[in-house]
Length: 540
Image 1 (cartoon, rainbow, N blue to C red):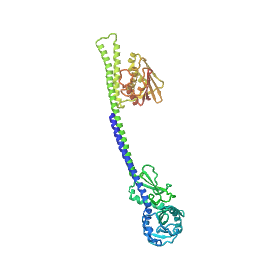
Image 2: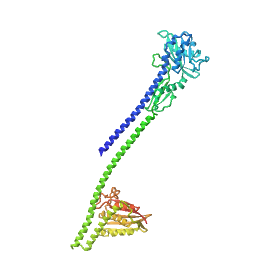
Image 3: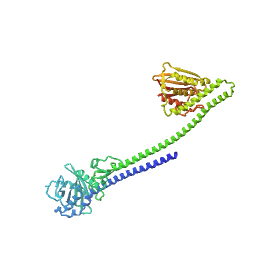
Image 4: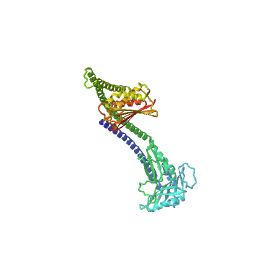
């Protein structure tokens, strides 16, 4: 049996490990997908935001066009506007001209708010303007970086409350960077970037990359945690990956160091697979399989336990039946042998010291003993299956007590018992089968006689309590241990201190008869003081 339970335990453990590995693998795969998607978005942002500075501002055309013919650079600017949505304006300044002489190349479809020139009707995507006020504000900041010999200038300015980011490439005439020859740069409207750029860029990257996996969700948040693009993500588990990036439109890894007094905001892109319905289904399936497996293992263990208990109970019952058959055989042989011996004595006229009346009384007593045993056996075979064979009628308690006294008169006289009968005034009749009730009390009296010890006092007491009549059989015998009382009303069960003899059916039959009559049987006993068996029966 230990081997079977060990096998069930090992099988359950392996099943649990397999399901846990499946669950872990599904979670790891979801984590990997969200991590890869976050890396992809971070890289896409970095490449796109540094694209203009890395590829457009370093184009040789900026230093080749004549200062009085700025339209010759229009092709480069229009190409930049087509490829990159975030530059709102390009500008250029030659070292020989005043600061106010800088040339601005504005988008025709998204002209900056600070532009003051007349709007020209043109199909070309680039408008050339000159904005002295804005030019001086921008170039004065760039001049600080020029004086420091920097090749890249990154600064910000505000126009009527709107923030702008300025990225400028500085070209020098000498290797010592002491004489600026030209400045080429672009301006980014940060309000437009917040409202349009990241929403459009994430949509483009998402749809051709991780967005094909509908189980992922993304968000872009600013330095304060406000949502800029995507959907809000509050999950903090391993299924969500976050990447930080600088809100700066230049290449931070280039050797062109920007101004040291400028600090860009740190924004965050997050991708999660915590809302993946496929992952939910996989985890749900794993959980259901685990639950079903656990229930199956418990059911199997319960079934094996029940089988073992049933086997043990069957063996115990077989043992009790064997003891019962042996005991009943002995109980039957004893009165039969006594009756046979008395009959042989009478038939051969060998009476010595014993009268015929004494011999006849012995035969009668043993015959009654044999009859009571046979009645118990017949009652056991009858009432354990059905109670339909009873014939209910009003029966007085005095009549039942009289039947019991008649049945045990010879035995009580021979054993020297003092039988007391007390019926309280007002005690009426009971409704029942007289023969069954007689058998019930006979078994109780027989037990009292057997287990009386040296005390030879027996009391039959009856009293009416409401709609019940309580019948007590009281002895002052050896008593019953408390731990044995509960099991004595089961068939074949006998107390551990019971003397030899007896079938273990008396109390079981008495309890069943009481139950079939709508009553109950209770036992109150103390070792060395005696036992009181109370039968409660419905009054007629």
